[in-house]
Image (cartoon, rainbow, N blue to C red; front, top):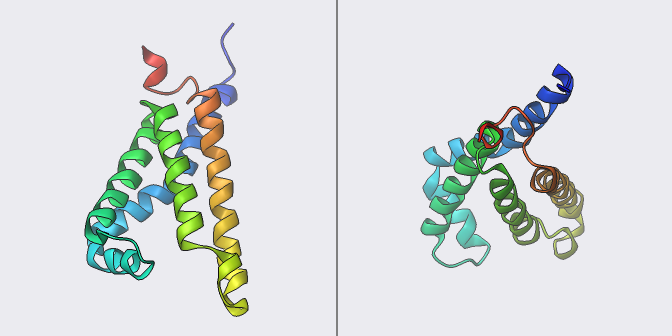
Length: 135
């Protein structure tokens, strides 16, 4: 029995929406790698130029893999852990001055939401309209 068009297409739309933030951020980082490295260094992390480049690759690569649905479960898992790291290191709302806590909490919980989406893709797969499903 064939699935309805909605059942076939909504996982694709979901993957596109999940990937959009990573694709946008990764594409932007291409043009601001030194500033990204400076932000990473300001948070006390070593090898900030290498980490900035790695972040760009993870965001663009993971985003593209999600959209096309190739190795989507593994891309989603990688983006899950990447987003967890971002939330804890860059948005620790519990450790900032009260004037910044609200903004950082919003970013932190936004990251948790993205992580939830990544767990859905990892657990249930990319859906019918994906390169993973053409094999």
